[in-house]
Amino acid sequence: MKVTVKLFATLRNFGPEEQQQELPENSTIEDVMRTLKLPQHLPILKVVNGEHRDLKHRLKDGDDIAFFPPIAGGQRELIERFIRSY
Image (cartoon, rainbow, N blue to C red):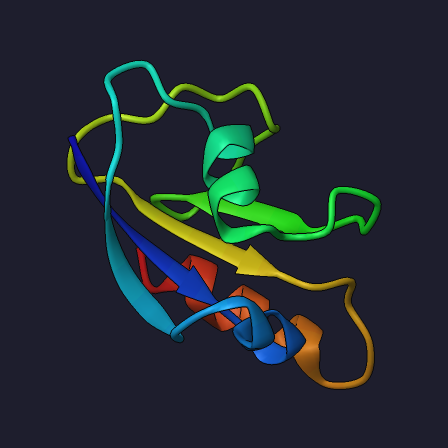
């Protein structure tokens, strides 16, 4: 299955801002985070198709996944605008 992954703010250090990933069926958000080598110890906000999800959420073909670092400064507005776009 194919998903679109978007990295925001400092998480862009772990890959392109937007990328397509080919994943095995039944992959989870945790699998994507591992693939990207995103730090597991940070409280990263995980959004799939505009809704907050946990690490064990199973992904589907065509899902849009966004990762946001811990909120600071003006990032809250960016996240809220992204979620409202769905």
